[in-house]
Image (cartoon, rainbow, N blue to C red):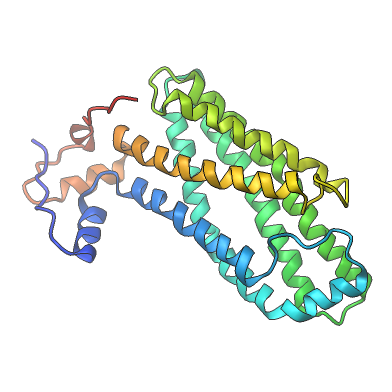
Amino acid sequence: MSAAAPPIPSGMVAKARWHLRHNPKADLWVAWWSIPIAYNIMGMVYFTITHMMPPPDPSKSQAEVVEFFTRYGFEIRLGFGVMLVSLAFLVWANGLIGWLIMKMDLPHAKAWGYAYMLAMCGGGFTGAYMSAFTMSVASLRPDRDPAMLQLLYDATYISFDGTMGFFLFGSLIWTYAILADKSRLFPKWFGYTCIWNFTTEFLVSPAVIVQTGPFSWNGTIAFWIDTIVYIGWQVIYVFMLYYAIKRVDPPKDRFRSMRLANLPGSRGTSVASTSGLSPQPA
């Protein structure tokens, strides 16, 4: 006999507390909520606080680079200090997507899930942590040698754009998994929208080679079109993850078994008895 959870109370805080204690998918929903929280923080940091986006001109002179770090030094350190903490949310997000890939009906699903998480962690380290590190180092002491500041400035944006290879392979893995999945955890049309994403990631790669034109790191193709497409696709995938969590069975692990066994009215049952959610149509 499965444990009977108490009724859901009224009030936002009480409801959240109830779900954290009794919802067998609580960790999945925490991971899902981490996505809009993290990306909103990152957008605010990049576009508002640090003045890193839209990207400044790649051909800035040494004097212009020094002036940039002198003017915005405190904002850069403040913004990236906040972002380096919020990036931990994306570890949960990547883990959620990797776990969902493992639940799909396709050959070697577990290997594909781990490969996705590995690719995205590599991209997050080189693209976010490294660029935040170099920008913060440069802004900490703007009285350094101007050539050194220009080196850190170039390293920031080359690291940020050069990391797209990791994200490209992550997007390819997710696209393949969605299109090959026989269980249709995600609708097939969503797999085709993922092609938008990895196509734009491929088009960013020339930004490490050229300094001017549409493929430079502030160019029409490498930044503006890529950013617009990515934001649109990101909105779609947040909703797709929401419906995938509702359809998938809760994870079965010892922690859930112990938690459900301690609920009032429980007789030591496993979480497996609570995982019979009927899937919605794809």
